Length: 496
Image (cartoon, rainbow, N blue to C red; front, side, top):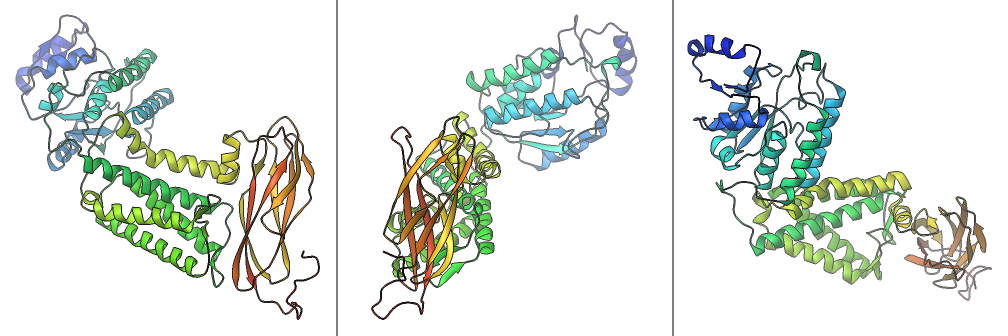
């Protein structure tokens, strides 16, 4: 027990029971702060595991058994008792303290790539050799931030177990203040970009990354980003997808496939090793290549599986092929735990949260990825979606496809006309002017040209010379035979 220069008679009470209970008392001449007290106690620690217990009994000592069991049975060098892992909050605590801990947890996650539900818990059970190797310097409550920073900077995993917590108030002697929050935040930043995690490296089975490891990480991140983008692009606007003239995937199946792609992409970015995940991804990309082969046999030239980012079939087949090759080449790496560390690698770990949040958040806020991209790029005109599926149309007949234009700027935008991909496309409702903050709808009329085929048409909008904007609208229809074709094979009236 460390008595940090108390003046309330604690030293006399401790001396009366120390011999009876059987513990050693370290008396500090003057109050030096929690960090200084812990460092002083650490110099005299002798067991394999070290844990901190504050004297105010906000924490239940019986819970230390749970930490010890996890420490002995697991592979982590540190086990934290989380006050928030059981229910997410504690009764009776100050909301300001709770918010402060969560803000510091977010800062730690951004800087070190690891999320802890309660990084500033008192109950930190850490292996003694690792804790001593930190060469701790903190004197106050920023000690928690320093310990976390050094452990995470060195690449160690931290396990968490739920514990009980009975908070006390300021009137009862709680000493933590707002300045401790800023001191902890600065500690996180300082140790992220200066110094090392430990003064020596116990290793614990960790090894440096090889060129093969870097290739594995790069390919896995690329596969994850590709699947997330493909899945998010199909969610909104949700519509059926024409693979061939005889294979039209209904909207419900498109949604199911999009969710699967997002889940698999997220799993890739978590960097969690799993043989089943690799096998599942292999099957998915083999299926993608099968679909591309069917489209090629049917005469298709492009793949719209990434939404408005339409790519030639050959390019998409090459991308899927490279994904399959990487899954085969790095198959062993997919089944072992990767423990790379450093600022860049920590941000890679963050991708599994950041990227899905950006994509799905953009869809929820703007309505589609196309609209989000236009907003964020500062375009003077935004369309609800650049690519739409208009269903089936009979040969020689037409279908009108509406597109909604929105002007987010403070100046009007003039749409003078459009350039169509062929004479079978007519652009209605043009010319038009979209007022500041206003909306206008235009229609693309697409005539069916060749029966039993997927017909993809496009129209590029024409603006005045001052509008530095290029906007191409795409429409896909499936053409069916019609009995309204004349004997000489000409189309219906109105088609030029």
